Length: 236
Length: 211
Image 1 (tube, chains in turn brown, red):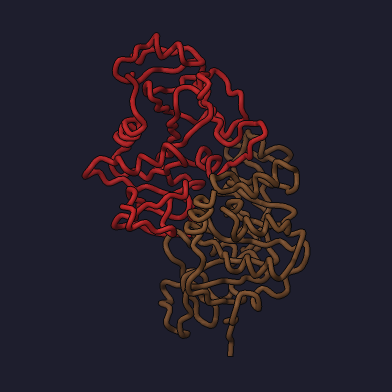
Image 2 (spheres, rainbow over the protein chains, first blue to last red):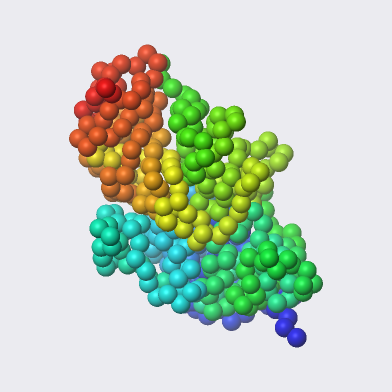
């Protein structure tokens, strides 16, 4: 019997190694796998390369992983933010490497990684500092730059519901990077609000099919980043 | 008397035609969602996987899993859809978005835009801007006419690193609506009480009256 359900986040996170590339879903607060990131902190892997759209908010989740100095390099489109002080301090002090990537290129590099496409050409970024050093080629009279796929050792994502095979559905804009990161990693771990019996998810509505998911952890009531940030602001 | 931020958003919203697919960037452009004229069907796209984004909800209905590019709570209108990031940017990069409205640090008369890095010690952040300027059919900018220090943001040439080259076709500021013409700007409409000469004095390239 296939059963990918793990009892808790710490058990599911086992096997992450120093130097691994970790894909972490989420955009703003929506879709952040905060409990999985906390389990990764407890697990102890270091010198990680993390791929995330942002750079963590407040002092939980990715921000806490950064503060614990587990991340050597962040691949990211938008590391700036009103609650991104942990990253900003590390960056200004030269304590973390940043690879800044246009957001669509980031999503497509992950999709390509999951689809077995090693690289692709895109016009995004042409003529800017982010195109420097990249191969260029002209198609239909327009310049394009070569961008390489991103593959992860581990993906940590958050979804709304799963079955024991690992089929996933998401909620609203919390879907964001989850589906492409699930495709692009050797091991994908999803935290979900609920686990439902096999066959209960509408096959027409499954967003991430089970083939892309390795482990599932039910977290019924995940930490609210908004509540955390409000508490931080009140404490100041 | 210059336009307020809400008036600029309403003016930019009024220039969006029925049926358009429109992406709104972070900051001032987000306000456009609150000012789509009643009865006009416009489909707002948010880079984080939303088509059919509606205005801000009342505080009691805020849902942090239904947020815009600026990470603020929004709503979904009937007909709206959610999708993942690669599909969202396929809409942008594949040329399916009719109009995008971005904020900017600087624009140039040749249509260049800078909005991702101040080139100094701040943290750079590109987000979806480079994809939007490469993929959207019409790139529009909402910005203050001058910096906090009073320097023009509508320039002859960019001083900051570019987000895109030759892409901007309309600029909304508190002083008016402008079109980059190559080496000059054209004043399409002045805010009430503003004159060509008064605006030109705060613009970094020659300004001409629309025909």
